[in-house]
Image (cartoon, helix red, strand yellow):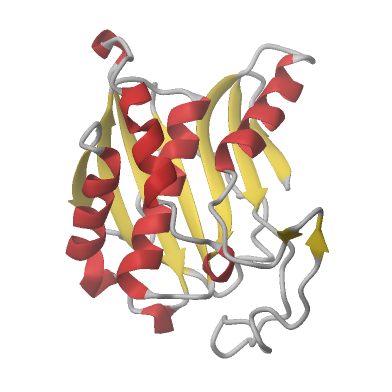
Length: 217
């Protein structure tokens, strides 16, 4: 994982979730079995599918940077291994009402983009993914589709993004405008998890995708 700082007051966070397997360059999927060797630790199977841990990662990174200066979160990007992501519907349902408690005077507009290998063919399934995302927000987020133009502006994201080597070959396939009650590290992580789980459920993909969440706030 790493960080990307934009200027001295803007913060973009980058995270890779989980150890990365050897990837087939033609498909972007793991080149061998998804779980070639299991590593139980204290009774836990570290290679079994599980909910992503976006919030702890983003919180630790932003808290660490706040210790050395004043920062303002403007965007996050996460390289998500869908082959490691389990069904997160229960976890998302449990936290959804927390976001309804935010003061609506702090409402924010977010830009969410998803990049994947062209072979994933995500664009035709944008409507299904949007509906799945709405279901997972219960319904504390508004989601509208955007045309995922390759050169579209993503306010709040510093360029170049960290992790571009790992994301080589991924192309922008989806973009959405989301409206939420506030912009925070919690919301950035929640949004990442919502779209990762929606794409997993709708498409069954098992390769890597890059999800960015950013705000002009």
